[in-house]
Figure (tube, rainbow, N blue to C red):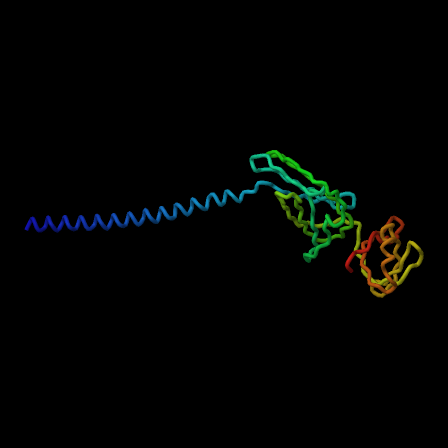
Length: 232
């Protein structure tokens, strides 16, 4: 009887041991699997760390909007930046509806000479852009490098609150004299002086054409068109 009980006890112990062994093996497999999964994710997160830090600051000054763009090398080593022209950075300006108002590279002439810049670790470069003629309102700007190796894009939204510029829209009535035009705005004929730039641009319009323009009011109370908006 004792032998039977002893045999039963041994068999039970062996069965429990095998089951617990299987369970621990399964747990090890699960832990090993989850462990290897977390290990593969960690390097991926480290790999997406930015090698360059890009920032943009906006200031209203002297009736213009100043855009300060900074790029810092955080890679831990010196980095070469190659440019295909003298223009090293560009920007795209959007209005509050997401429409493109200005692309800097389309409005400036630059040399075609190849240029290389070596940016040491923790070294920073900066560029300043001046944007005239922005009326009060909301805008978004994207600033980025034109280097072959790195774009380092920075995007920010900003408000213009103290602009001297105003948006004008109407129908051209005609020239009053070589430097003055008349524009029908909401049924009222209004005289506008023309800047040197606007005087050249008015030659592409005919009487009765719709016109869109940026203007200011000078100290004499005269309304002066600075330039006509394109694609209007």
